[in-house]
Image (tube, rainbow, N blue to C red; front, top):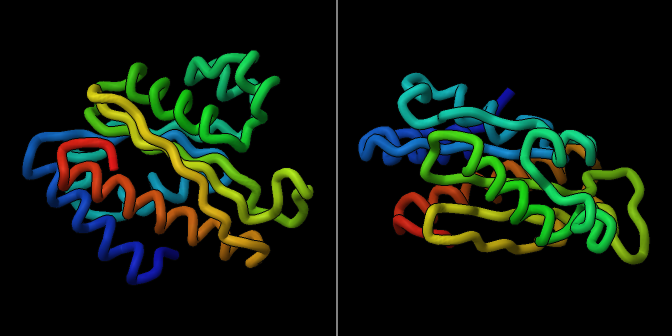
Length: 166
């Protein structure tokens, strides 16, 4: 079930993107398709949502998005570098103009180096990509996933409205 805040933002994104004839692609790990689900819950989303990749495993990130093993080895799956490679790979492998990626540690668990609630995002367009990390904290798995979904929608909304990465 999608809550009202997520639904409202998804409606806005679909309306703006569809109105411009622009498409979105998602590349998700810890959210497991929640960003794509929020967008496709909106009637008319086929005019704005091109496709989604759920790349939960490292191998899926490599196979479907072209993430480099060397980047995984150096930075780990939860990093801005991987989020950026995910977004760029999704954009390259689609007909979309905007890509959003999400990778993180929803919990339970984590480590001192990569704590529960750390989520990395990236937005990519043909003009480039930008990444950021948000520390949501140990809110619990579902709350981290919901917060990450909402944040990803805010980022893609900003990118679309500004015709650029956030």
